[in-house]
Length: 470
Image 1: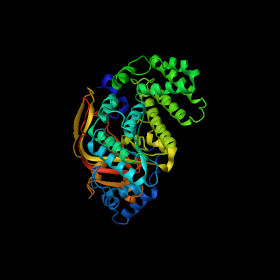
Image 2 (image 1 turned 180 degrees about the vertical axis):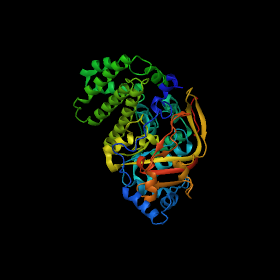
Image 3 (image 1 turned 180 degrees about the horizontal axis):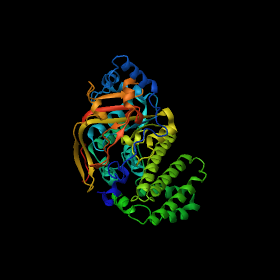
Image 4 (image 1 turned 135 degrees about the horizontal axis):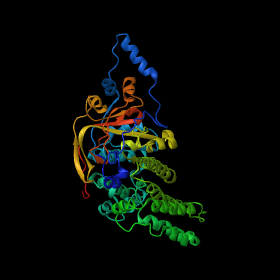
């Protein structure tokens, strides 16, 4: 039975599994994907079998190149992450996925890896699939201690983004604030790269800048923005916005686009280049939201268009941040978004593919897999947050083989694994790919080696401690 549109709409932007509207075409690769495994790899294995030799098994090959992961505890030692640091190399942006949107162990591992990258590799920004304006507010806490973290989380982690209101992310953001107290001249930062909401502060930042630097434009900008800034909480605003008539949403998008282009085309005042740059980006983020929401989320083709646009926007915002702050960035998102490979037809090109196009080898993708475990997710029929559990991965799945490896939890560089492992990793197989909503009737087939550079496999995961309202 088709799911209620009332459930689909509020969850559309964290929507793997929350808007299963069609069976995906399982693509092997997209533009920007890593090169396929050379034919010689498969040929050599076949020749060995023909000569009566025993080619190396996939499990043996993975065991030989896997590096044991000793813990996901962010407060423990970091020495076992040195191998992963070597795999990351000199990349400026590391995309770190998750196989569910609500498992503690994925979030804790993100915290642990970010700590390692900060301390050992010079990374300074943690980026989350969260609206730009919400990220700015969290960053003001991280940098300056502005506000109360739990109040900020309750206000900003709403609607489709409310899963981020969990103890694990509170711990991560709290660690970032503590780090900055000890390193005030070399701080870490937090950014949101998504387009699902634009808070009232974004409108104020744009109009305040115009009032100071371009007062002759103030009346025009004020009129174009009239009635657009949120006056309710973030979740209510986003839900009500998508219920507006399509024509009204399109007209709003035209207005925000005019403000963005008007401000973008102004010459910054002398000595004010940086302030101008950020004001233009705030205006751009507002326009990204209205442009995305001008599409019809009840139409399958329009939803697909929105998902492509969303991944492009997230990639553009991360690339903008890297360019204009100079920070190395750990990008946190679902496996699907950090992947090179679009294995879901609803996501025709992913954030990872866009970033690969823009950054080349300066972008590295890390995916997660799990054998079994628990997670938080929206109920597919009622949008209520609950804990769910999946059992041991089915025979023939990617995780079924990955979990036969001697190491229980491990890191694998799939680019340099032995031939037998690389050939196996290139082929699409059934894989856990759990998003915002559950249950999900879709079956996902993923070639892990085509999707990511590096894989972190966890035997078992547990659900995060959710702090929001169900």
